[in-house]
Length: 223
Image (cartoon, rainbow, N blue to C red):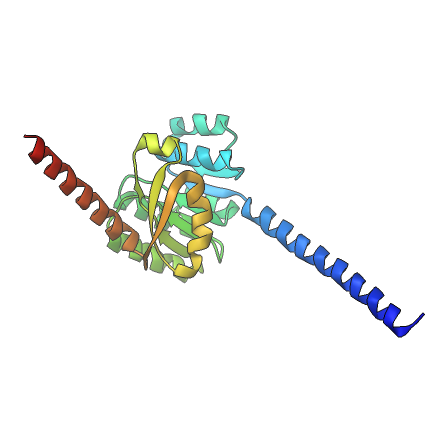
Protein backbone atom coordinates (compact mmCIF):
# COMPACT_ATOMS: atom_id res chain seq x y z
CA UNK A 1 0.00 0.00 0.00
CA UNK A 2 1.35 3.43 -0.95
CA UNK A 3 2.13 6.09 1.64
CA UNK A 4 -0.60 8.28 0.12
CA UNK A 5 -3.21 5.56 0.62
CA UNK A 6 -2.06 5.03 4.20
CA UNK A 7 -2.31 8.76 4.85
CA UNK A 8 -5.85 8.94 3.37
CA UNK A 9 -6.91 5.97 5.48
CA UNK A 10 -5.51 7.60 8.65
CA UNK A 11 -7.15 10.92 7.82
CA UNK A 12 -10.58 9.29 7.30
CA UNK A 13 -10.21 7.36 10.56
CA UNK A 14 -9.24 10.57 12.39
CA UNK A 15 -12.26 12.41 11.00
CA UNK A 16 -14.62 9.60 12.07
CA UNK A 17 -13.03 9.44 15.53
CA UNK A 18 -13.10 13.20 15.96
CA UNK A 19 -16.76 13.32 14.91
CA UNK A 20 -17.54 10.63 17.47
CA UNK A 21 -15.78 12.64 20.20
CA UNK A 22 -17.72 15.80 19.26
CA UNK A 23 -21.02 13.91 19.31
CA UNK A 24 -20.11 12.40 22.67
CA UNK A 25 -19.41 15.84 24.12
CA UNK A 26 -22.70 17.23 22.81
CA UNK A 27 -24.52 14.22 24.26
CA UNK A 28 -22.77 14.70 27.60
CA UNK A 29 -23.68 18.39 27.76
CA UNK A 30 -27.28 17.58 26.85
CA UNK A 31 -27.53 15.02 29.63
CA UNK A 32 -25.80 17.32 32.12
CA UNK A 33 -28.27 20.11 31.39
CA UNK A 34 -31.11 17.86 32.52
CA UNK A 35 -29.62 16.89 35.87
CA UNK A 36 -31.91 17.49 38.91
CA UNK A 37 -32.82 21.05 39.84
CA UNK A 38 -33.62 21.93 43.43
CA UNK A 39 -36.58 24.22 44.10
CA UNK A 40 -37.37 25.72 47.50
CA UNK A 41 -40.55 27.72 48.09
CA UNK A 42 -43.74 26.21 46.65
CA UNK A 43 -46.15 29.10 47.07
CA UNK A 44 -48.40 30.71 44.49
CA UNK A 45 -45.41 31.65 42.35
CA UNK A 46 -43.00 28.84 43.15
CA UNK A 47 -45.32 25.94 42.30
CA UNK A 48 -46.05 26.97 38.68
CA UNK A 49 -42.38 27.91 38.17
CA UNK A 50 -41.25 24.48 39.35
CA UNK A 51 -43.96 22.82 37.25
CA UNK A 52 -42.58 24.54 34.14
CA UNK A 53 -39.14 23.11 34.89
CA UNK A 54 -40.74 19.65 34.95
CA UNK A 55 -42.47 20.38 31.62
CA UNK A 56 -39.06 21.17 30.12
CA UNK A 57 -37.67 17.84 31.24
CA UNK A 58 -35.79 18.85 34.38
CA UNK A 59 -36.14 16.46 37.31
CA UNK A 60 -37.17 18.65 40.27
CA UNK A 61 -36.24 18.08 43.91
CA UNK A 62 -38.27 20.40 46.10
CA UNK A 63 -39.25 21.41 49.60
CA UNK A 64 -41.39 23.95 51.41
CA UNK A 65 -42.04 24.83 55.04
CA UNK A 66 -45.75 24.07 54.53
CA UNK A 67 -46.37 20.37 53.76
CA UNK A 68 -49.72 21.15 52.14
CA UNK A 69 -47.80 22.94 49.37
CA UNK A 70 -46.15 19.68 48.26
CA UNK A 71 -49.02 17.69 46.81
CA UNK A 72 -49.62 19.45 43.50
CA UNK A 73 -45.97 19.38 42.50
CA UNK A 74 -45.46 15.86 43.82
CA UNK A 75 -48.38 14.68 41.68
CA UNK A 76 -46.61 16.29 38.70
CA UNK A 77 -43.51 14.16 39.30
CA UNK A 78 -41.29 16.17 41.65
CA UNK A 79 -39.33 14.52 44.44
CA UNK A 80 -40.14 16.09 47.82
CA UNK A 81 -37.57 16.29 50.63
CA UNK A 82 -37.81 17.49 54.23
CA UNK A 83 -35.59 20.59 54.26
CA UNK A 84 -33.35 22.88 52.16
CA UNK A 85 -30.17 21.13 53.35
CA UNK A 86 -31.43 17.82 51.92
CA UNK A 87 -32.19 19.51 48.60
CA UNK A 88 -28.66 20.96 48.54
CA UNK A 89 -27.25 17.49 49.12
CA UNK A 90 -29.05 16.17 46.03
CA UNK A 91 -28.89 19.03 43.50
CA UNK A 92 -26.14 21.30 42.19
CA UNK A 93 -28.56 23.89 40.75
CA UNK A 94 -31.09 25.32 43.20
CA UNK A 95 -33.79 27.96 42.77
CA UNK A 96 -35.42 29.68 45.71
CA UNK A 97 -38.71 31.61 45.61
CA UNK A 98 -39.49 32.97 49.07
CA UNK A 99 -41.71 35.69 50.61
CA UNK A 100 -39.15 37.96 52.31
CA UNK A 101 -35.56 38.69 53.31
CA UNK A 102 -35.81 36.84 56.67
CA UNK A 103 -37.12 33.74 54.85
CA UNK A 104 -34.18 33.84 52.45
CA UNK A 105 -31.68 34.19 55.30
CA UNK A 106 -33.25 31.22 57.11
CA UNK A 107 -33.39 28.99 54.03
CA UNK A 108 -29.77 29.67 53.10
CA UNK A 109 -28.02 30.00 56.46
CA UNK A 110 -30.38 28.42 59.03
CA UNK A 111 -29.76 25.14 60.90
CA UNK A 112 -31.31 23.14 58.04
CA UNK A 113 -30.34 25.63 55.37
CA UNK A 114 -28.87 25.18 51.91
CA UNK A 115 -25.36 26.17 52.95
CA UNK A 116 -25.19 23.34 55.51
CA UNK A 117 -24.83 20.77 52.73
CA UNK A 118 -24.22 22.76 49.55
CA UNK A 119 -21.66 21.24 47.17
CA UNK A 120 -18.79 23.20 45.67
CA UNK A 121 -19.72 24.65 42.30
CA UNK A 122 -23.46 24.67 43.01
CA UNK A 123 -25.42 27.43 41.27
CA UNK A 124 -27.90 29.14 43.60
CA UNK A 125 -30.57 31.35 42.01
CA UNK A 126 -32.83 33.38 44.30
CA UNK A 127 -35.97 34.70 42.62
CA UNK A 128 -37.40 36.23 45.81
CA UNK A 129 -37.97 39.98 45.95
CA UNK A 130 -35.74 41.05 48.84
CA UNK A 131 -33.32 43.70 50.07
CA UNK A 132 -30.32 43.89 47.69
CA UNK A 133 -28.04 43.96 50.75
CA UNK A 134 -29.36 40.54 51.77
CA UNK A 135 -28.63 39.21 48.28
CA UNK A 136 -25.04 40.39 48.63
CA UNK A 137 -24.77 38.81 52.10
CA UNK A 138 -26.01 35.48 50.75
CA UNK A 139 -23.54 35.69 47.86
CA UNK A 140 -20.64 36.15 50.27
CA UNK A 141 -21.84 33.26 52.45
CA UNK A 142 -22.26 31.02 49.39
CA UNK A 143 -18.83 31.93 48.04
CA UNK A 144 -17.23 30.81 51.32
CA UNK A 145 -18.73 27.36 50.67
CA UNK A 146 -17.54 27.31 47.07
CA UNK A 147 -21.00 27.96 45.60
CA UNK A 148 -22.28 30.73 43.30
CA UNK A 149 -25.27 32.89 44.27
CA UNK A 150 -27.29 35.00 41.82
CA UNK A 151 -30.34 37.16 42.50
CA UNK A 152 -33.08 36.91 39.88
CA UNK A 153 -36.35 38.54 41.03
CA UNK A 154 -39.31 38.25 38.69
CA UNK A 155 -41.62 40.67 36.97
CA UNK A 156 -45.07 39.18 36.44
CA UNK A 157 -47.71 37.58 38.62
CA UNK A 158 -49.18 34.12 39.12
CA UNK A 159 -50.71 34.08 35.62
CA UNK A 160 -47.34 34.86 34.03
CA UNK A 161 -45.69 32.20 36.20
CA UNK A 162 -48.22 29.59 35.05
CA UNK A 163 -47.72 30.49 31.38
CA UNK A 164 -43.90 30.78 31.67
CA UNK A 165 -44.12 34.47 30.72
CA UNK A 166 -42.07 35.90 33.61
CA UNK A 167 -39.18 38.32 33.16
CA UNK A 168 -36.14 37.73 35.38
CA UNK A 169 -33.78 40.58 36.36
CA UNK A 170 -30.48 38.84 37.07
CA UNK A 171 -27.53 39.94 39.19
CA UNK A 172 -24.34 37.98 39.73
CA UNK A 173 -21.12 36.80 38.10
CA UNK A 174 -21.54 37.44 34.38
CA UNK A 175 -19.76 34.21 33.44
CA UNK A 176 -22.53 32.27 35.20
CA UNK A 177 -25.39 34.06 33.45
CA UNK A 178 -25.72 31.54 30.60
CA UNK A 179 -26.06 28.66 33.05
CA UNK A 180 -28.75 30.59 34.96
CA UNK A 181 -30.49 31.68 31.76
CA UNK A 182 -30.97 28.06 30.68
CA UNK A 183 -33.18 27.45 33.71
CA UNK A 184 -34.83 30.86 33.88
CA UNK A 185 -36.04 30.79 30.29
CA UNK A 186 -37.78 27.48 31.04
CA UNK A 187 -39.87 29.42 33.56
CA UNK A 188 -40.17 32.76 31.79
CA UNK A 189 -40.00 34.68 28.54
CA UNK A 190 -36.96 36.83 29.33
CA UNK A 191 -33.86 36.84 31.51
CA UNK A 192 -32.03 40.19 31.64
CA UNK A 193 -28.49 40.48 33.00
CA UNK A 194 -28.29 43.60 35.21
CA UNK A 195 -24.77 43.42 36.71
CA UNK A 196 -23.24 42.15 39.93
CA UNK A 197 -25.12 40.48 42.80
CA UNK A 198 -27.91 42.73 44.10
CA UNK A 199 -28.38 44.53 40.79
CA UNK A 200 -31.22 42.18 39.88
CA UNK A 201 -33.09 43.49 42.93
CA UNK A 202 -32.31 47.14 42.16
CA UNK A 203 -33.19 46.61 38.49
CA UNK A 204 -36.51 45.05 39.50
CA UNK A 205 -37.29 48.00 41.78
CA UNK A 206 -36.47 50.49 39.03
CA UNK A 207 -38.73 48.65 36.59
CA UNK A 208 -41.56 48.49 39.14
CA UNK A 209 -41.20 52.19 39.95
CA UNK A 210 -41.26 53.06 36.26
CA UNK A 211 -44.41 50.99 35.70
CA UNK A 212 -46.09 52.63 38.72
CA UNK A 213 -45.25 56.11 37.40
CA UNK A 214 -46.61 55.23 33.97
CA UNK A 215 -49.82 53.92 35.54
CA UNK A 216 -50.24 57.09 37.61
CA UNK A 217 -49.65 59.24 34.52
CA UNK A 218 -52.29 57.35 32.52
CA UNK A 219 -54.73 57.64 35.43
CA UNK A 220 -54.21 61.42 35.49
CA UNK A 221 -54.93 61.64 31.76
CA UNK A 222 -58.20 59.75 32.16
CA UNK A 223 -59.41 61.90 35.08
